[in-house]
Length: 159
Ligand SMILES: [Fe+2]
Ligand SMILES: [Fe+2]
Image 1 (cartoon, protein in one colour):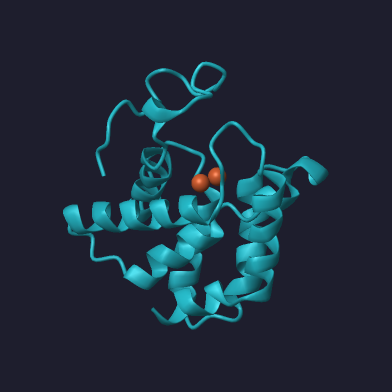
Image 2: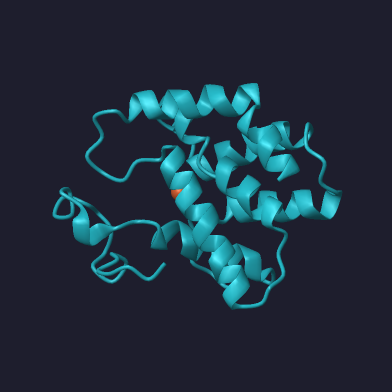
């Protein structure tokens, strides 16, 4: 996948992800490492196929790779990471080969990935779902301390 490959080799992507992975080394709650990004990409792609949404696979993977990068600066800035991720994504998207419509779709999904709300773009909805479905709460040692509500926690494997 052309754009996914560019992101994987992108300096800013690797800087931010390396920082997150270092910062979260001893984190007991859900991590935002490369495995998380891939889980979200793959689940979102399955949801898109199941719902016959015909969303470009490269667009899905790029969105997943970029959606949590703002975590690198969330504590230092006090700004929510979906907003920070949006800014980083805007910078990285300049080096990618997507048309303007695809770019705004990616940015919109990143901006709204923490909100479970109806959206005119189905992609935004399935991306939010994929992010949540990626978490295996039933195997989590920090389940009791986690602030997710019981309804939100995943008790089985769906994807
Ligand atoms: Fe996030
Ligand atoms: Fe995430």
